[in-house]
Each structure stands twice: as C-alpha cells, then as structure tokens.
Length: 190
Image (cartoon, rainbow, N blue to C red; front, side, top):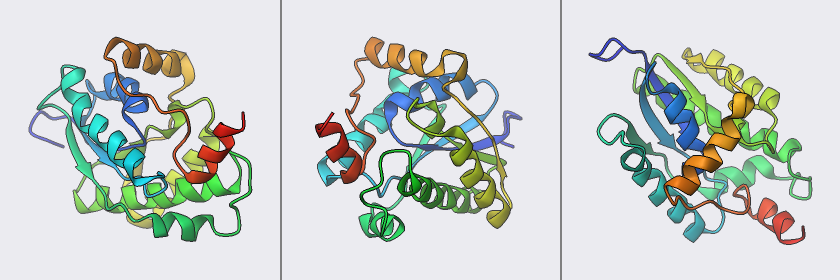
C-alpha cells in the first residue's frame, strides 16, 4: 500500500486509448503506475508515438502527479521469438495468446520488483481481445511472480465505448491496428 492507504497497482498498458477508461475506472481504488511494455508494436515509429501519448495521458485525464508512468525495454526480438511459427494466424489466435503471455509475465516481474500489491492490463478493454486468454496469461504470471493479478474484462459495462469517448474528448491518437506487423497487415486488407 502507498501512503494514501490504497493498494499499489501496476497497470500494463497497450496504448493511451485503452488506458484512458481503465485508469478512470481504477484510480479511486488504487495507486496506479502504468507500465508501457509492448515489444510487439511495429514499426518503431508507431511504438514511440503510442509511448508519447501514454506519457501525456495522466495530464489529459486530470491525474497528472497521481498516476505514474514507467516504460519497459523495447525489444521486438522477444515478440518475434514468442510469435515464431504463428505469424500467419488470424488476429485473436495463438500468436496473440503468446503475446499476452510475454507482456503479462514482464508486467508481473516488474510488479514484483516494484513491490506492487497487484497488477492487471488494459488489453481486455478491446472488443477484439479475448478476456479469458488475457486472464489466463495474467494468472500464470501471478503464480510465477507471487503478485496478485486483477482479473478483468474492461470492455464490459461500456468500457470500450467510454475509452472511445475519452479519446475523442481529449483528442488522443487512436491507432488502426493492434500493434504487431501481422495485425497491421491484416488491418490493411480489411
């Protein structure tokens, strides 16, 4: 717990739009540190753009100084290693499950290092992401690192729609694909 008496939560973030609603929903109950760790994002310019918007988000939400941001190492080789053999899978398949595992294991490790009470992720706010698979990956990482995982499906109760609303209201950059080069190719063909 922090000095306010709130439990310390490490919130893995995929991007500012998804983070917007999740931070709004959880900020009263938790002392939040956002962990921007996304070695899957392609190309590097897209990664940097999303990271920049993530850093701007607390101020845009009126939570500057209340929500901290930390960033993991950008090492796309980790993602390509995890995705090897699943490059042609459609969005939502085994490649995505392995990507969830990669990012949530890194989040659990960082949560343990920072002595957080719990961790979770913004990934489940997307209607394109399988909350069950995300929660399974989080639970496995929780067992490995001994930090509680906050199971969630943030798209429920209007979460996704609220993230869209907050993005429009605050003029937040909203990408057109999940993040990896394989999802980028899929988005270009639809």
